[in-house]
Amino acid sequence: MDARAAARAIDALRRGWPIRVTGGDGPLGLLPIEGATAPSLAAFDPRGQAPLLLSAARGATLKLANQRAAADPHAPVLIAREPWIDGPAAAMAVADPVSDLATPLKGPFRALPIVQAEAAAQALVLARLAGLLPAYFVGATDAPAEVEVTAGAIAAYADPARLIIAARARLPVEAREDTEIVAFRSTDDPREHIALIVGQPDGNPPVVRLHSECLTGDVLGSLKCDCGPQLHAALHQIADGRWGVLLYLRQEGRGIGLINKLRAYELQDQGFDTVDANVRLGFAIDARDFGVAARMLGLLGIKAVRLLTNNLAKVAGLEAAGITVTERLPLALPSNPHNERYLATKRDRTGHDL
Image 1 (cartoon, rainbow, N blue to C red):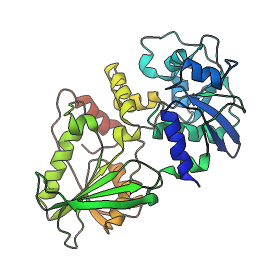
Image 2: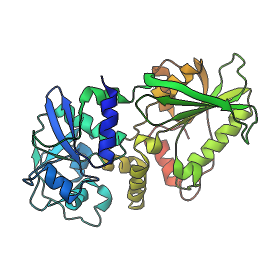
Image 3: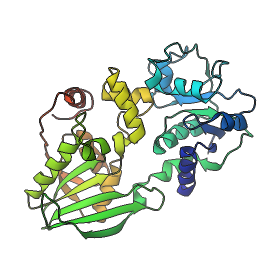
Image 4: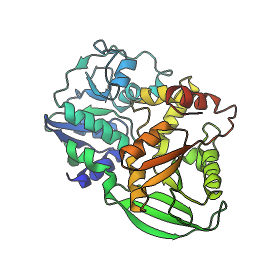
């Protein structure tokens, strides 16, 4: 599959341009609601009739009449373009749950059948990869498109097998001076992942920490999560051993991107926990791909690890990708008044052993 087409489609979506996604059941012309303007919508849908493609989780929140309680929250739903959805701002109010308190009187909505189900499902994945809300205007078959991409190309886009080692250098750090930094990149995905090798390999399984990027916690010192303290504690715990590796994975916000993570923060301020906030936005509870970490370890020649984590899903993710986890080491940190609920949610709803 041509994953480069998926990369071009992601770039187009981030610019607010229309795309066309083709699956086994036909093509789907799409304009991202986030980034659409009145002129771009008029060019894409001159008749003003384009329905809206959203996630089923968002559809459930909007109380679609035929929405089943057991529906897959990540599946696509199509809703009719009602007259009051008269432009991008009104459509954004439908797509973005953050605005629900400000504009509570939405609807009623009418669900439509989705003929191009495969294309619609992969379009939602593509929106997440672009860091956008999973929400589109759906155009006519002859709607303009800057890029055409197949559903298969989208599925192949983030294949960890495409990662290679791009550069490496000595990098003394505060926790320990004998460290080396290794950068990984893919021919398609612009995100660059990092490994910090602490100490010298000695033939024993290293202590390994998988740390997903968190700008707010790692750099700005956010108290809403425990990411920054975990990063620094993990580095020191690795440094206190014989040798180890910290993998810094560019999967911000559990894989939904920085802007969507900030939307999740807004929903948390409205009373939702981290799990419900992600689902209301139309995303998986955790969209990260730990196959990326397994690929990085494989390129470093590491087949077995002592994993420093409270997240049992990381153990399962590495082992499913062929890395043996010989031991799981806990990472215990105190809470603060701002992240107590966040930590409780990780313990009670996402299987963290805290």
